[in-house]
Image (cartoon, rainbow, N blue to C red; front, side):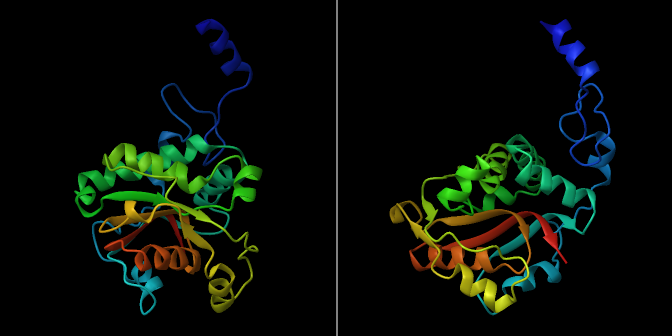
Length: 228
């Protein structure tokens, strides 16, 4: 069947999820040129105050790191659009693995015990077919060799979109939106919360508060992108 797959690739070539150009042999989802040139923050190697200040005075976070810098009409925005709206859960796993490899090389795995993606409400997850944060968490878990769990928490309030809301409105929109299904699993654990992009941080702040109030010892925040 290899010849048939080859023929299909010729007629319907696979394209890069960042730039849309055809992928070459051995490339997976993202072409080599885009991988090399993606705008990395390197926040796991040096303090980035612009990232860390998102939670200052709100919750205690041990680490706040992001893989890439997000800007409008950029390849990063296109990647996240593909991940969230174009049925590309495998892209989330790949991005998690790519970032996880860099974090592993910097011994970041030694700072966390458990990885949890920010939960989606069940209705939104059914509509999308998957939770993109869980896909990223899976990839990070693969690379860091740290367990991840998609059953510990759930979102119980189907919140309105956060777009065009103020910082206060965003927080109130997600206040008390999460609950835990098994509190014992998080007690004393250093937990990394995972999401695709960090904007105001309101959703992550609400979820982190739920975890801290129920006994986890530390929170770290890992996202694929950070918005200005």
